Image 1 (cartoon, rainbow, N blue to C red):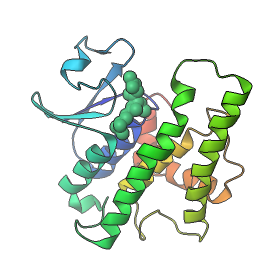
Image 2 (tube, rainbow, N blue to C red):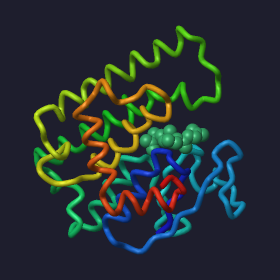
Image 3 (spheres, rainbow, N blue to C red):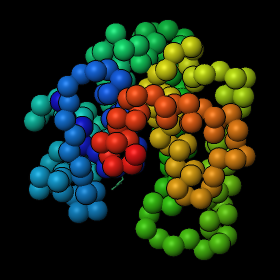
Length: 203
Ligand SMILES: N[C@@H](CCC(=O)N[C@@H](CS)C(=O)NCC(=O)O)C(=O)O
């Protein structure tokens, strides 16, 4: 099993999930601008949309899209308890968070990663949209819960840690969202998170 990734990108959530399972896996970095992996492979032949993450189970069996990769990892390693059982209300809640994180929060950050320099009013509009999404996460965590779904760490927490965590390097900051800030600090202490951050050169 090989995870195609970029340091600090959304693929970090899958990287964390893999460490949480204890399973053996490899990683390979992708230069998404160049469309090449670090071994020189043409990434478009591996993942046609050109973005990370992609999880290769074999040369011709590749899973793409973060929420799908995360749920595959969780479902293949039930002992790690990274997702509630399929068909339960809690599993639907997990889907809800994964979808929100990838389609709403993640994409709100995209203008910061486009390489373009944002004018002041453009930046303010981007920050306003991100803030609205972070308000939602704050409202979910404000009751003091340790995790997004139920009383166990799940792949939704790994995804939230990564995507909401981008508030720091982009300068949005997390001070306005104290429950979320505390959640991110707590999740960062997990051994699997520390291992993934170290492997990506971020700790
Ligand atoms: N819908 C995809 C989006 C993945 C995505 O946007 N990945 C970013 C890194 S966080 C990327 O590889 N961007 C480079 C590109 O789009 O070329 C998912 O949820 O997995």
